[in-house]
Length: 416
Ligand code: HEC
Ligand code: HEC
Ligand code: HEC
Ligand code: HEC
Ligand code: HEC
Ligand code: HEC
Ligand code: HEC
Ligand code: HEC
View (cartoon, protein in one colour):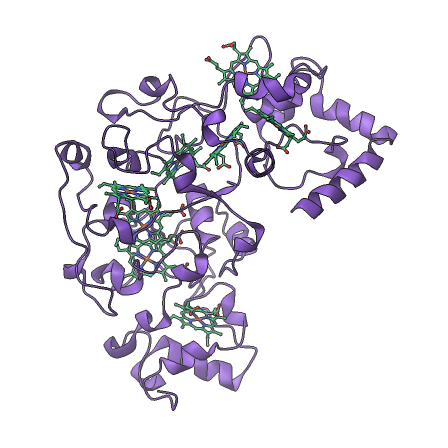
């Protein structure tokens, strides 16, 4: 990271001498009154060379610079609660939250120069928080913690978070377990304890379903009783080929709404809301993992939904798996997800074991191909033709050789 930064710095130093830079500056900042860069910036993605500013790019705030390098604490910038918390959510839905960007005062000591830079229509640094920052329009983007708040014509910035969420599922085993609507009041009245069912086991039926999972995870865009099976319209010639269906993904929390019912300043349950860094962990570059996803496939299908793209691009086991499909909803979540060993910051620990696709229950893994197992069938095909692509469960992994763990789960295989 540091090395990359340094190189960029040097290259951009040279670019700064070229006349093209002057032209591009004019393009970026436009003439007075023009919306600056449309107010949207794909954060962390490399900007096209023509838009690069010499030296530091003050339109791209980085926590690495401020938290790791400058050793600033979260609360030196983020105040809790922010004074707008009663406005962003109203009535029963309102709770003390960090719902606004840091104030100018948290930057000015170090960035007076950037705040008063002569750039039109506004200094670059303003665009980290403001849509425009012209004297007439001081609107800010929606602070991203308001993932559950919609409408109100709010402007969202497309950005990739620098943080991951450290949520210890095991520590919540016995404390979360309420159905959604009653949730907030009941918690206020004191804890209701519902156990998560028996320990993790393959083939668990949904009668042993932990009651807690749906508090934070729900099937996203379920097909339900609708006849519309696919997320987008497939070509007529689709046949048996894969096309993304509704109800494939489970949601993950997109705000503080659930967490702060228990983790509040009053409850005394650590972490308190102001302890941002206990839940939010800066990700290191090497925390990326091989995913079973291909952005080209998503583009071909015309998928633009952010929740879907986020979920799909994080799949490390089986990109084609659909939660709503077949008998999947009849199975217990914990039969496939071993939440007691899962670390939400380490994708590797989130892998769903191949065995949970069948095993003793049959389903996709059977003694022989004739018994109907999809895994058996695909392994046979791959043996006969190494160019065969396994597409039943996978988006991109299916091109690779068969992993050893796929062979050992077949009941009749010699390894077993
Ligand atoms: C120097 C001031 C400063 C400090 C210190 C700081 N932040 Fe931020 N933070 C900001 C600003 C400005 C934004 C909005 C710009 C952006 O999204 O990058 C932001 C945005 C965020 C976001 C949303 C964007 C993202 O990358 O996910 C999270 C989460 C966040 N901060 C958490 C933290 C945590 C946790 C800490 C402490 C470890 C922290 N911040 C420390 C200034 C700061
Ligand atoms: C303790 C001093 C300090 C404070 C407070 C501070 N910064 Fe910085 N910031 C730095 C330093 C040092 C750099 C490295 C580049 C430089 O020297 O300007 C930097 C760089 C930046 C950059 C360039 C990209 C990056 O992050 O590396 C942006 C944008 C930025 N700061 C915005 C802010 C904003 C917005 C605030 C207030 C919410 C803030 N800073 C508060 C010291 C500070
Ligand atoms: C770190 C985020 C951040 C940055 C960077 C930032 N602002 Fe703001 N700005 C805010 C917030 C938050 C408020 C609302 C403050 C309040 O309501 O007390 C605000 C309010 C304002 C206001 C309304 C007047 C006021 O004080 O309520 C103006 C004008 C403004 N900003 C201009 C700018 C300009 C110009 C820049 C760049 C030089 C800039 N801001 C950079 C966060 C930011
Ligand atoms: C109190 C809320 C909460 C409860 C209850 C909860 N989870 Fe989670 N879960 C989370 C959070 C937060 C994450 C991390 C999301 C992220 O990384 O952004 C997560 C992540 C996951 C992931 C990995 C998601 C990914 O991005 O790949 C799985 C799988 C999962 N949970 C399954 C379960 C199961 C099964 C249960 C029930 C036994 C459960 N969770 C109960 C909050 C919860
Ligand atoms: C038959 C096995 C199975 C069952 C039952 C199951 N899941 Fe999953 N789940 C998976 C697979 C496979 C993935 C994709 C994991 C990957 O590739 O990273 C997944 C992914 C997830 C994710 C990450 C978001 C996504 O959809 O990619 C969450 C959260 C999750 N499951 C929660 C649950 C919850 C809650 C339940 C119970 C209501 C449940 N799962 C039931 C197999 C299952
Ligand atoms: C029903 C109440 C409840 C909800 C909802 C809840 N928690 Fe917790 N959380 C607890 C309790 C109780 C503990 C302490 C458990 C222990 O120490 O064994 C805890 C512990 C934690 C810890 C560990 C702190 C440490 O010191 O190791 C983290 C991190 C955490 N919760 C994050 C979250 C996040 C993130 C959410 C929302 C997705 C959330 N919690 C939702 C009750 C809750
Ligand atoms: C108890 C755990 C917990 C604490 C404490 C906490 N958060 Fe969060 N935060 C979460 C969870 C869970 C989410 C939803 C997951 C997500 O959006 O990635 C979230 C989401 C966010 C988001 C939107 C994330 C994004 O990148 O779009 C921002 C911004 C944020 N929190 C800022 C803060 C700040 C600032 C603090 C400290 C004042 C804080 N949080 C304290 C758990 C916590
Ligand atoms: C019934 C569903 C299913 C079928 C069919 C299937 N897989 Fe998998 N595959 C999984 C699951 C679940 C995982 C995640 C578990 C793991 O990585 O250990 C996985 C993981 C993988 C991985 C990643 C392994 C790693 O170490 O990262 C590769 C590569 C792979 N499969 C290739 C194939 C090939 C090639 C075929 C066809 C012969 C195939 N799979 C058929 C379910 C399936």
